Length: 448
Ligand SMILES: Cc1ncc(COP(=O)(O)O)c(C=O)c1O
Image (cartoon, rainbow, N blue to C red; front, side):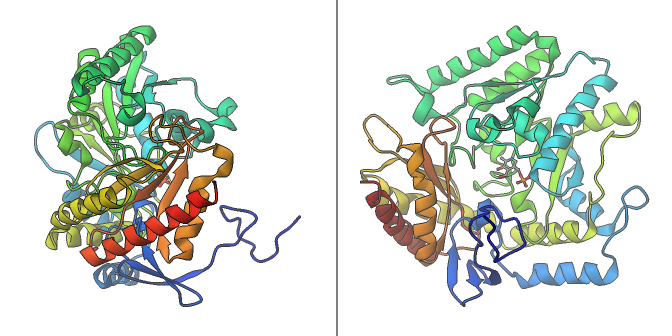
């Protein structure tokens, strides 16, 4: 049963999406001229909005000078300048950057670099990785093995590496017991992680991997106070690395450049993507502490990994322009103030909504979780695909948000992620909330 409109294998093989032909700040423009308000920056990508003239100019300038030179032979001006912009010289800080083409590649590189670090520092037995259920680290096989989201893993389970195991996520709405304090919840999660280290043998664990604020699979879940300090301590005690996946929550999205700054921890390795290049070019990065770099520099002298397009000059030029504009225009301040406005408006609109169980998030990274019953937190039947209905109803009202299923347990549950560009103003936020409210009302009405 072929569908003939398009030769592209789209996300749905049954439906060809409309063509986007233009962009204008927080708006996307479809081929029929319709303007769609980008309430989620795609998937928390477009942090500067669309068609920012300074970024376009930087990419064209680089394209007119040099589009590509293979990294086996050359470095490039934009790659060097971007690394200088992202990492610094502070002792024990993040000191080096490895540029790839997206989030999954950054995660793959983090797994391999952690492994190689331990081989070269005389601990080859460290080959286990601990991650969390309900996490998303990407769709390549290594990243999918690390991820803990049931429906994404299911079909590919026989291909996934058993070297990854998964512990309970710091997801208070679903995992915190009634009457349990945050401190007790953190202590319970820390005890579980410690027990997992003991089960595996603490000196076999290479790293613990987590998203500081969980994005796509759970809908903007921030950790309870003290959680990341507790897991950092456990990693330190056992000599394992802490890998933070800031692909979605990083680069300013939560109101600080890195989400982990709000947790008071710094990782050994951190994966970045999405907001790094803001969608102007495909780019991801793995940034690392100098001890990782030094071990390999003093050992074999080369990270045994590479991709043809790593450190691509156009991608690095785009990301450098995005990051310079963010700093020059002090956009983090706007993320914090408009993020507070967005959180307030969402709570006003959905705080007492019969089908919204939770409104949560940080900065311009907010999520709402839809439930059939607020008291019991019972999700909607997964077969209803409520998240897909919300997406459709929102698009019909000229709003792009990022709804997803599986929020409760990896199969059931629906949430909507709202992550607009950092340039957004109050009036556009009000429009997002208004249109989203109508879309959710229409979508939930279809299920009754
Ligand atoms: C936390 C996280 N890690 C990794 C990835 C994978 O990134 P990409 O889709 O660029 O490969 C994503 C994508 O949504 C993500 O949200």
